[in-house]
Image (tube, rainbow, N blue to C red; front, side):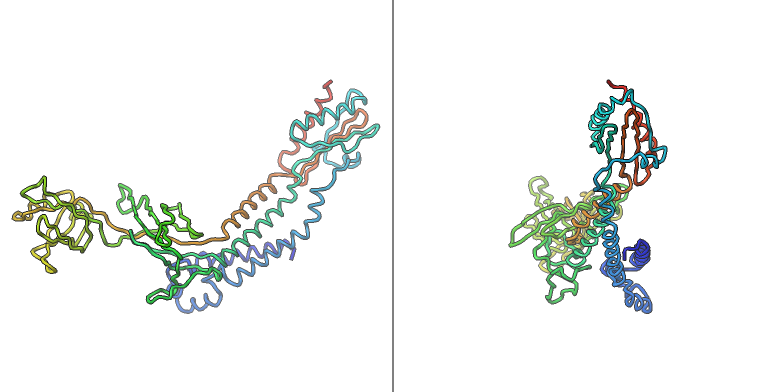
Length: 462
C-alpha cells in the first residue's frame, strides 16, 4: 500500500476514467438525458459501467479511496526518517567527513595566526546573523572551533504538506458530494419564485421536494422567495444579437419582507443563506413594456395622456373616448425601427382596422388615419426577458480551496527550497569550509564559492 508504483497505477486509472467523464454526456450536467442521446445498446452498457456518472461511479470513488490510503501509508512509512533529518540536533563535522564532501562544495584557507581563531569565529557569527542566519558553535576546544548553520531544513517535510492537502481536497469533495447540490431557475422579469429545478443533489442535502400538482420530479423548494426585480441586457453596437452584459437585480424575500437585494452579473454571483445564485442565461418572454402617448388633434399641446401598457392589455383612454389594445410589437418594422400594432376596441369587440405606430416616425399615424380625431405616439418599447439563474450550494468549497493552497505551497517549497547545511571548522590557523545539500540545485557550487570568498575576507578584519 505504500508503494510508489501503486500511486502511478492509480493515477493512470483515474486519468483513463476521466475520459468518459469528459466525452460522454453525464447525468446532472445537461438537460439532455443520455438515454435520449445514445442508442439503446450503448445506453445499457453505460448504465452497467456507470459511464454516465463517471465521477461518482464505484470505480472512480474506489480509486480515490485507494489513492488516499496509499498517500497515508507512504507518509506514515517515511515520516519518522524525514522528521529525524529535519529536526536533528546539529553536530560537528569531523575532518574525515569533510574530506568526503565533493571538492566544488568545500574550500580552505589560513588565518594570520592561531590566536585569531575565536575572534574570527565571532566575526563570522556576527556577519551571518546580519544576513538573517542562525549560526551556532557546535565545537569549541583548545585547538578547534566549529560554526554551523543551515537553511530550508523543513523542505524535507514539504511532501507531507502536499499529501495532507490532497487528502483535505478529497475531504472537501466528499462533503460537497454528500451535502451540496446544483440546479437552475428561470424567473420572468418582475416575478418571484420559491422553487428551482435540481440537476445534481447530494444524498444528505435535505432539500424539500415539491409535491404540488403539476410539479416536476426534480423540483425543490428554496425555503424563501427570489424576485427578479429588474433585468437588463446590453448588446454590442456592431453585433445587435450578441450580448455584451446582462444583469439581474434580485430580491430575497422572507415573511413578506425583502431581506437582501443584490445585482447578479456574469462571474459575480450572489449568496444568500448558503445558496449561490449565478447569472447564467436569459431569454425573451415574448412581451414588452410599452409607453404610449394619446394626443387629441384639436389640442396637441395641452391634451396629452400617457399610457403604460403591455401586449394584449386593453387600455381605456377617456380623453379620446377610446379603448385600445396593442396586439403586436416589433423591434424593427420593415427597416423603420420599433413599432406596435394597435387595435381599437368597442367592449370586447374590435372596431375598425388595426394600425401601426412607429417610434422613430410619429408622423406615420397621422398619414394613415387622416380622419381620426387623435393620434398615438410610441415613447417606449422595451422587450421583457426572463433571467436564467444557476443555483448551487458547495459546502466543501472553502475546505478544498485551503487544500489547493496547501498543495501549491508544499509543491513550491519541495521544488525550490533545499535543505542546506554549512560547516566552518577552524583548527589552529587552518580554516575548512564545507556545505551539503539533500538535492543539488542548479548553481549551488557558485553559491558556495561566493559565500566562501566573503568568509575568507573576514580574516583580514582587525
